[in-house]
Image: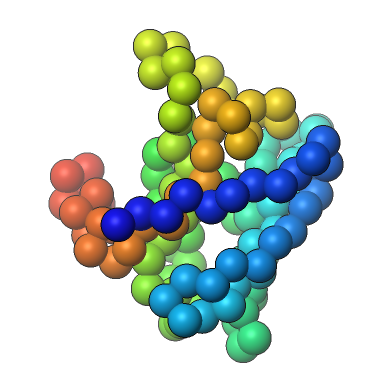
Length: 118
């Protein structure tokens, strides 16, 4: 079952938090680059770090980086949760309200990949 990751950005373009998933403690750092207009994720554990991956909507964020973090068994997605009739871009202001960060289990990632031809 996917897990919604609570976001505590409090008007900051650079914030981090710790979360325990499958008995592994992850540090998630989210930064917003004003110049390019995108959010970036850095994910780290005690042993591994994946740095500054561009956050994309409704697509596995770390799918090309699994080899860099063997501890990671699922993936993170940013999904739209409000106003599903419109398709806004992910911006500084709507991350955490219109869009939320989710962790998908390995089974959910496989199901998503199968349904989307990846």
